[in-house]
Length: 364
Image (cartoon, rainbow, N blue to C red; front, side, top):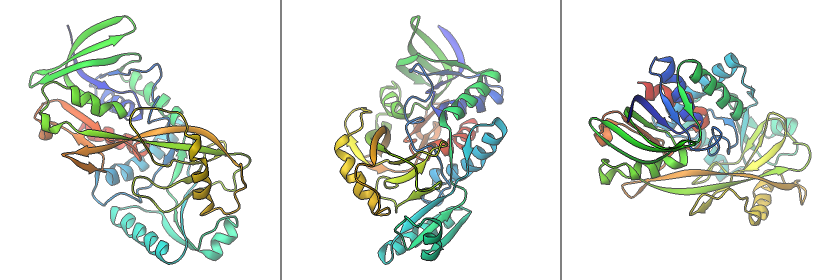
């Protein structure tokens, strides 16, 4: 049985960022990715937004890693020439109760350490975005968009150049651990094999919780549960009315059906929140009327038939000890008592933004 130092399970943006970070530190990790390409799931099925830390509770892992990750990601994209654009974002509201909710969001963002925020009133909104139905907007200058595939390609190249071994089509089918290390049963293109490692990093996105649940040697009361929230996206037929991002007020399980633009200028709307029992990436066409209603709340002039089904993403929603856990979850030896094990769970939005910062934390 082959013995290794560090193995990373998961080749999405977070796993690749960790592989790069550890390789640059001289630890030469081996990364195992079950799919034929990197980032087939959460990392490529999202809005590709560089978030600025508005929504997350001050001091939470989401808030800290988003703010740190925002700065790291812009610098990395500039250095590696990854396509991105600091386009800015408006969170819009009508008056009354919505204005009070927007003020609460602003207060939270400031308390969390977000910067580059300012208010816009109705005259400025009508002047800059006359199609928009809103009385007030909170503008975020540090929000942007990024080419997620280009980002992952750059991270993978950096990791390999620094000594990491990245293995596609390698799936971990069984695993166990104790204070002496970890045994993995792996199936790959050339058959099944076993390997031993001293450190194991689980960064498998939707697969992290199932892997942890199957980890023999983990205390049973630490095994989390995971719900699946599918987010449908529809794209706009025709030209976008704007080059910035437009968000409604956030909802309980998401940020609302927002308008984002990609680097080509194409507008799309989403995601919504649809609870599902198993991974299924088909767009639910029955959601289109609700999408139109949600968009018309801030764009009343949206013409009928303007939305076309685009794609979906699925977000992991954690339950720990029987209660919903809305923050990122990073479990280490202090939580589970297994030296060398780090598990990243519930890495949904803003995971793309936070990836480089989470990699720093894993490096330690």
